[in-house]
Length: 119
Image 1 (cartoon, helix red, strand yellow):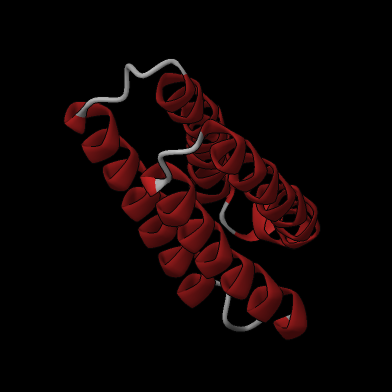
Image 2: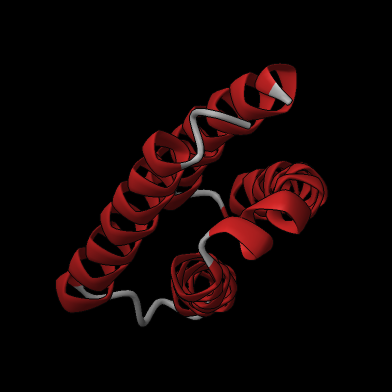
């Protein structure tokens, strides 16, 4: 289980880096490439998160559910942000909301990880 946690955490940083790089690009073709890299990252995170979710939901169901919902909302919002970027409608408010969602999801995941350290 610890290898999954490490993989999940590492891909979380790759996801954050690909978001930063993708959203700071001016060329829309490069934005599309980074959008696909971001999708690959959260695809891996979905798989590793789902595997870790099975024992977690039995130990702390409410916390696991909140983390799952935050992760789904984050993925949807990432797609919205990339769409806004491609259409030239990305605002600071959108970026700030994205950062807040990322931090909340990471915080929730870290507290869940600490709670489930016995698994």
